[in-house]
Length: 200
Figure 1 (cartoon, one colour):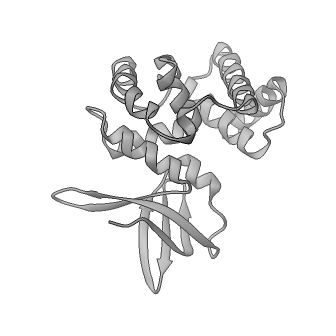
Figure 2 (cartoon, rainbow, N blue to C red):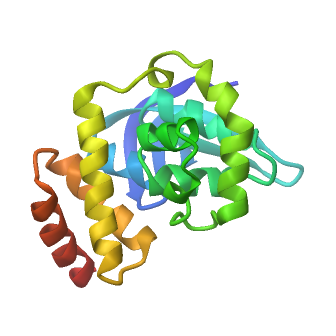
């Protein structure tokens, strides 16, 4: 129904954003990834949107990138996956990583996401693999730089998990760090993530 909304960002919280368009304020639920991409309140933004219709409510979901909305909608096609869990997946891993987990049949990459256990991860992969293969850009092989970045991220996450931290905690810290400073080495990511985790 709505492709996107362009307007002034009136309010930004970790899990929601309010965008004012022509005097009307629209509330969107957002992922951690979209939250990190949005500017300060008062700035102009464009959010790709998805309208969820239930008997008792209408809810807008907002995404900073079209591929994130695309993956969100695919996840909703999975048995037992609703909007809340689909948003958790997008908050837990970058879109490219979710695509790779599905295409490479590596459900363990999804286990650390809140609400995603072994059965749900396996179901996501089983039900979405063919659909992911039919998508344009992200369905192909990742560029060498993207693969290298993905390996670095996984190496840093695995190192932190071995230190005793939960996978979901370190995934959030590592992904946030690499979005801000993509040129860090594994050692630098681990050190910075430790500081970030201890300070949170």
